[in-house]
Amino acid sequence: MATTFRLTEESYIYPLYLPVDINGLSAADGNYISMKNYNHATIIVLIGACAATASMTIKRATTVAGGSAEAWTGWDYAMVNANASAYNAEDASDTENFTLTAVTSYTKATGTTPNQVWVVEFDAIDLGGGAWDCFSINFTDPGNADIVGAVAILTGARYTGAGTNAPTARTD
Image (cartoon, rainbow, N blue to C red; front, side, top):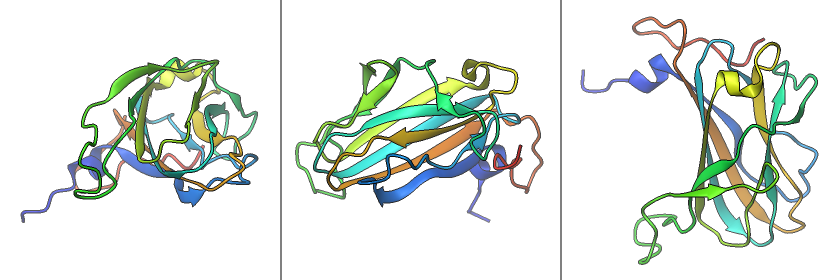
């Protein structure tokens, strides 16, 4: 069999936001996921059309329902590709590398540049420990059409088995 699914067997991949127009969604957090069975999180944000500036906040919570949710003040940087090609040959001058970019007051602004890719990574303990084991993201209302999608990849699963999915991160 030529097809292998190592990433899905050893990690948990789940959308925080499926690609959506975030205009008017400032009160809508993305899906919360729990890190109680994982050691590391990678958030990948894909920004398509971007007509106005919005700001992303990472929120931490005590449950996957968003219990006791608050802005998480434990992240300072994102890796940013500010000019990715949206499809083959869409942009002849696309940027291939990421740049370490400081965030301001624990938020990352989109600006109005389309076709961006952001990556934020952290360990489970960085959320604060104890009951703080869940997270999601939230964008402020840009007041205009901005298309954003984000996926989280949890790695360092505490329990895995060959040929099975890694533990769910959608339950407390």
